[in-house]
Length: 427
Ligand SMILES: [Fe+2]
Image (cartoon, rainbow, N blue to C red; front, side):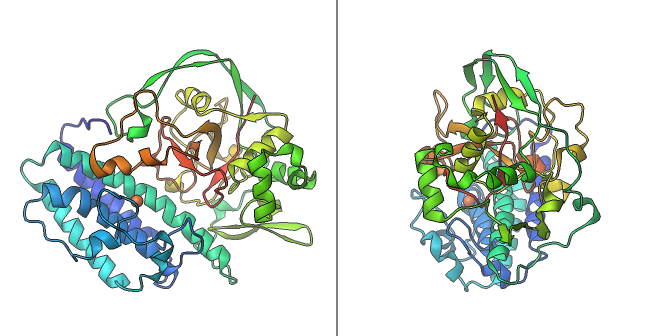
């Protein structure tokens, strides 16, 4: 986490605090209290838990330490809503989160309000500690991560429900997934020494540091993400039946999970439909939109089938450093990946680097040379997951715009499919 620089960091923090916290509630507007209790896959959490846990983060890492006289809302909550911080307290098994019928939603909302009033009191105080401001900014970035998780988790919950509820009705601008896109081109990038990692005064996670040098050979990246139509050709060509296309662990995952298509694709006599936050979409209408909800193994197999490979995270970041930080992110309101041509980025040699889908890279998630986790319990935020996960870059259609940057490193186990994760080819 780097230093915050602002003429009035308290006021900046207060405005941003209110904005981020209110957006989390707004994302729950289309949900019923019953929707907010569902935990449909082990990776997911109920929306009500996300609401409580994001308040817990401020209570546990900011208020107890930096607001004199702070009174806990409920003495059971510090352990009840702890996710995985072993240094902080014991915590319930993740799979039990959907059993928390108590506290009820109203009490969780009062918990949020209690925490909000305390954080705002701290931000309005005469001289909050710089470390308190840094922790609040970390808490806001944490909450933005949970906003994305809340939506990915609801998409899974609604897909598992036989009624297939629609999170948000389709709007005119989302109805263009079948628009024409340009054929895939490859853009060359120079090799040589590149600087990788966060720089500048803004926020970053500890895993984006230290900035360091990486040597790259010359490489090329595809001009856009792989589309659903292109991925359907891989399926039709027996992609899921040809072991020679798959890594050994990937081929095992295909057999163990019965994969025949990306998550949320269903077939009715060979006619594919895709379930989205905007409801069920026939493949024809999504053919030009980026394929999403594929695992690292599927991305890798597709790349091999296409005669290409996935980029390393360093190749991706070196290319992204010259790109604008704009794209189809949560702020667009679309809530699903859209075709490249619609984004008005035609002049860019590579489109969709930011937004639409997280891009699986060929890089294992490891600490950079000289990496140091944050001190104390917050050191568990990122560092302890540096085993068995792969890096994804670029954000998705449900990532808040304020949350993404070229040095941002997301990471998931290679079988993970419930995130908005897609494919960019490299050579
Ligand atoms: Fe969390």
